[in-house]
Amino acid sequence: MFDCDTNGRLSGGKVNNVINSGCADSFRLDSDGNIWSFATDAVYCIIPNGDPPGKILVPELVGNACLGRCARHQFFITDPTGACSVIVTGGGFQRP
Image (cartoon, rainbow, N blue to C red; front, side):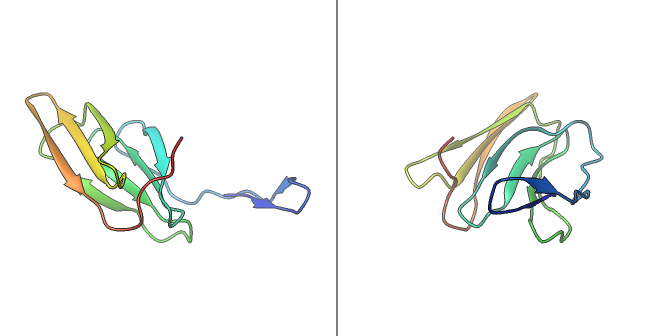
């Protein structure tokens, strides 16, 4: 996490959170400023203030995850044997 001054210059820099289960892949920001990403065991919600990340655990290895529905608040998650969907709270995800 870096500080950004009014001219857009970055300073500081510290680790906010670490995902230890495989490599985090892709990410989306929600309207609350949370970062959502997925690794091999879960979909992670990384909170900007440094609190421990939230997780949506899945029974098998996460293959991929994407967002859907008009409000952009539903995750579709695939694993080796199927797929599931989870609706998350909040104001939805920002458009890329």
